[in-house]
Image 1 (cartoon, rainbow, N blue to C red):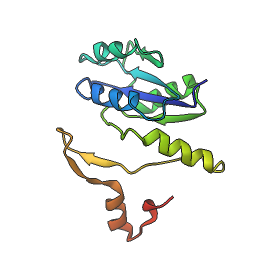
Image 2: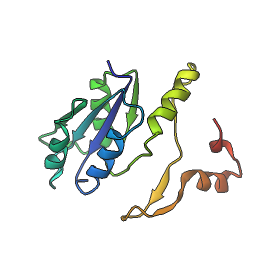
Image 3: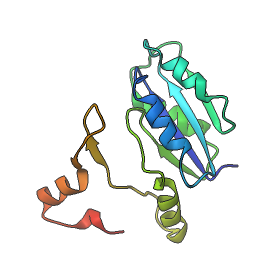
Image 4: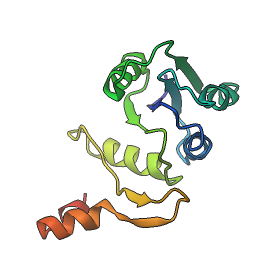
Length: 149
């Protein structure tokens, strides 16, 4: 049984999928399964996804019709998850290699905590950093609340 199930819902993000999936596969914490859920994409997402299913810890499911809701995809992923923890990893994002290692450690050390979040940075279509959400929240709320555990 994996410690973490990574659920990656996808719809027409073929251009982003290699960077996203590579960022998951390259995590320093390797006790995970990856479940990629395609919501009847009309681009070449299926080809990209299938190229990763040869990896031992990667599974994929392909909807025949688009259900119109990323939340339905999250629920589908959650219902198929085998891990103790679940990471919803959107298909047009990518992650630092130490993300899982860091968050699993925090969750393990704090058993009363049920949710871990990380700093998110916004990037443009060429992955150029534009800023992070913590700075935005800090400016809005005049608080450093999101900078500490």
